[in-house]
Length: 294
Image 1: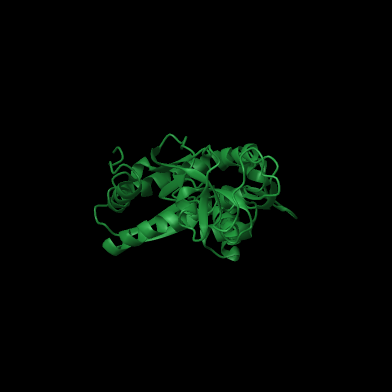
Image 2 (image 1 turned 90 degrees about the horizontal axis):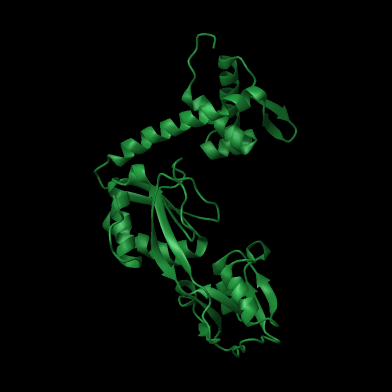
């Protein structure tokens, strides 16, 4: 070790490069410059006396030494994050920031109006809303609060079912409604091929087997907008479809399967005042109004 102590910031760089495979991607992840990342990585390798990565044309690949210390670095990260979460969980003042993750349309149509009311009431808090398909890691503080349609399986995550979302078939006001069991001559708007096994996708194929898929997207809001433009019929969450001008529900005699929405946060943040306040408002507005278990 050459008489030097390992700098935790250098270990963070090592982990970011190991996870992303390039200095550029790691720099973006940590909010640092690429030269700084490279300098910190070289410093760490000099301190421990081993090369941690093999530099290739495709990126950085862990050496045997790098692979051997990866688990130790991850444990250091968990302890450091646990330290930060514990301090954050002791906070009593309703101020500071919260990072929230959800799907795109849910964030726009459901959470944003709620968050506007929350911020008007609590002016010392700032919210960051991230809407994409990635599942953010609560233990690493990639997000403080996550909304998603599948339960959480991480052992340190506090979770509860927020609500059940009904789905319906929607079409433009001027379109003639299709007939169940047929769909001949009709066009559909649905998920893209990567999500073809979702329950609502299977339902519309069964109910309208002869309809043609005209537009596919993994973005529910894009589906709703195409539907409102008269591009075809789409199965949408009612919270989205009912809020989209120009659309009406189509009754085929059987409702599409709905989905549950779950919320989750790390147990170390359960006493964080600003998070508790946001949870209370969210549950009062969307759920049953009960406080989540402490």
